[in-house]
Image 1 (cartoon, rainbow, N blue to C red):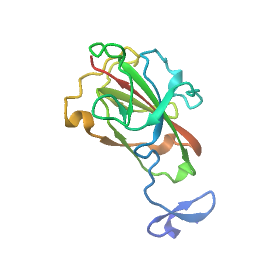
Image 2 (image 1 turned 135 degrees about the vertical axis):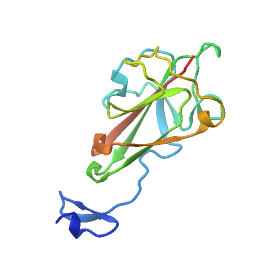
Image 3 (image 1 turned 135 degrees about the horizontal axis):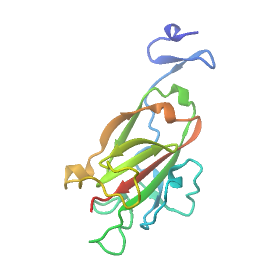
Image 4 (image 1 turned 180 degrees about the horizontal axis):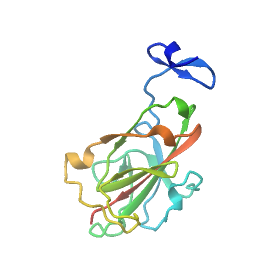
Length: 177
């Protein structure tokens, strides 16, 4: 069986030698539950690895943040004028057959900058040009009120980092000041 034998709306699964229907699947739905750490600590680099134990972190449904009426409010620290620079977020999700995922769209809402990891590998960096990214790294520029702080910015990412079974998306959000 090859791609030519499969008709519209199907793809060839070379492992099972069958045509399988394709469509759009949402891997992380709006309102999904996320683990988060909002204590201003330095988590180094281990926190975004798939095997990291985040069970001691708080959890809550998205949208997570402060201001703009989030579903889950995270702490900015004890001083509103001196906010923690970095807050960490993790979510696990299941993919039945990673080989069948041919495209991956990522929608990111951030204030001010963010780095996104899929299964421990950076896949998107938004407004953070300094490397390496440390917990003290500031975002390049502030999200400018209104739409810039509340818009989900869409990018297409490489789905090659997905695996069969559990996957981890990890996001670190950085303040500009």
